[in-house]
Length: 401
Ligand code: NAD
Ligand code: MG
Image 1 (cartoon, protein in one colour):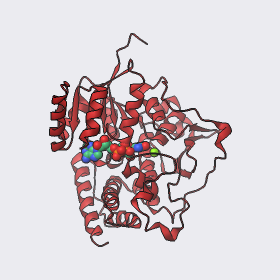
Image 2 (cartoon, rainbow, N blue to C red):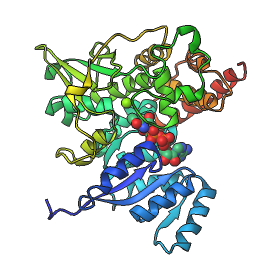
Image 3 (tube, rainbow, N blue to C red):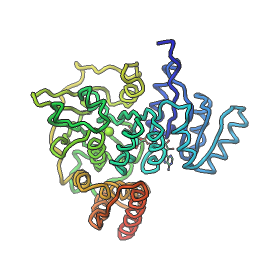
Image 4 (tube, rainbow, N blue to C red):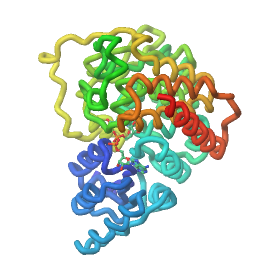
């Protein structure tokens, strides 16, 4: 519709893997989208290149020195872009009046406050930052309901599930009953990661390089490690519970090594709806950007003649201890999921710096959850305190390895 003005966007985490895929889709549809703000942590070169190409009005670098360096480069290039720093600035670009849509693609807990700011401002929120939802579950969904924000899942599994759900559930913002709409089960698929067939005895000593080499997807480092432990599927299980209001018997994980089916919804009549596609995040991103319409994403069509067999099996608990930890945490309550997410972030960062072994990630998560007194965690202050406490305990545990 050429009479409509373009959709204006803030992209939180613009220099990351999701940020790049989002900007690629947007660049192919200049009449439909315009970039208001871009944010990143500290990569000045990458952000400067994005500034030249996309001409945002505002840029936020969460690292203060990076903001100063970028400011200088922008000035030298005579670009009229406002550069700022800090969490308040991140929240401001997420909530700005000039913005229709916010892509929430910061990695980890750092994304919580800016993503919540977009939600409170009633934006159309494209959620990639699963950690934000995992660490704040009920509070996040209540905020969506109260502000009338439109929450669209970018995570490929949740995007697939969203596409396969009935209209009333799509519209229900995580409040309607799945059973009332004929849904018997959500089947969350996962590839099993790079160590699906590694001998169990060799798992513990795997390197960061091996862990980050995902067989099907190209992603940021943190989520790549999470895919290797399958805590990523665990976080996604918790994410699905909140997004779609699942009961414990309505959510199951299936290993599907080819990553052609991105997840499925099973109905009481025996129907199963699956969403399929290339393992390329531009597909779910384009779906969210244009919903309820469809736009070209630049992704090649599936070639069924060349595809070969699609296989499925149940996840092996001994291989993926983090998956069960997350499923248990999901039903134990907010303190458990907030703590698990925090412990995992600390452990994954240490693993990437080669301070601990791959096998220690699950141990640290387990120990933090075991030590949990399960206090009431509801308000934002309680959530942030719980996150901080779990990080401290994880650091302590880590000093023993
Ligand atoms: P990435 O590491 O490639 O990018 C992360 C982005 O966040 C970068 O722009 C970085 O500058 C920014 N960032 C990092 N730390 C920050 C901080 N402390 N403060 C502010 N900004 C910070 O990560 P990614 O793979 O793009 O993933 C982003 C999010 O999307 C994650 O939550 C991930 O779980 C989710 N996700 C990613 C994929 C994927 O295919 N990459 C798929 C599904 C979901
Ligand atoms: Mg996913």
